[in-house]
Length: 348
Image 1 (tube, rainbow, N blue to C red):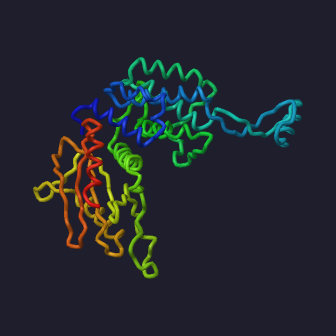
Image 2 (image 1 turned 45 degrees about the vertical axis):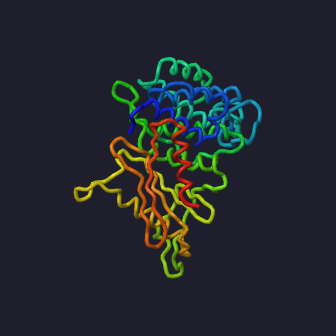
Image 3 (image 1 turned 135 degrees about the vertical axis):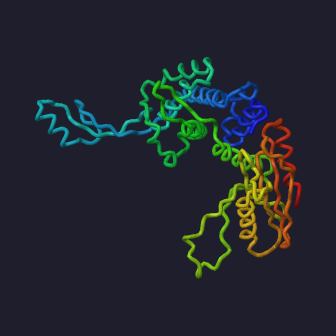
């Protein structure tokens, strides 16, 4: 997928800055000027700077339930525990109460992820040392079993919103973590296509939101153009667009794709993947329920070394156009921006 790994990694950082605006803050500003030859060194640097910033602000604390025997009443008396104490000639009162604590799942995730990177063989010694130094401030935080984390249940509000980007970054790292070997070493797969696909999609959406607000970029769901009274809607899949742009009177639906191979081989011939074309065509057909012919679709692929795909378009007799475009993530970021800008100048 990459011709110059260093350029791609730098562009991954730029994509992350669009996906997570926190990376535009001063404490991350110098990262763009550094050279990274491994994705996990980039992650280690971002995580170290994020944790350092958070320590200056104070680690997030939330109320946790505690049950202990103490001399004076605090919170609610645990009658069964207190009776058990008396039977053991212990005059302490068993109490249940809530206490603000740094030992919560958000800080536990930071600790667990930092530990993975510290043990990772590709992370440079100086970055490991930086993370180890920061972990000295996590002595009150317990380790968490990474398999027990319910990522979908995590919630962010004004008290812990600074953790949002760091937590998503930790998710990227932790979900690539494999079981320890017999020698006790951590292993990780390469940063996967699945993760890059999500980041690629989020980057393109946030780019248009930031630089072209008039397009009202969003990731909208498309309703099926059906007679609901005569349809079992429970069996229909959700049609979730990656990016939907409003261009004057026209609408452009973009579906982003990140694959090692763009093309498929069918009957000895290289073609676009059938399911991709069927998907974007369905989005266009169902969205243009009034047959205005002002809705177009685009398949936007991250360019690969394996496929030399030129720009293409399919003009349908109904009046809409399906565009096929690639975005080269191995080139200068200004070229990437110019390429994205060119897509919205096609039809207005």
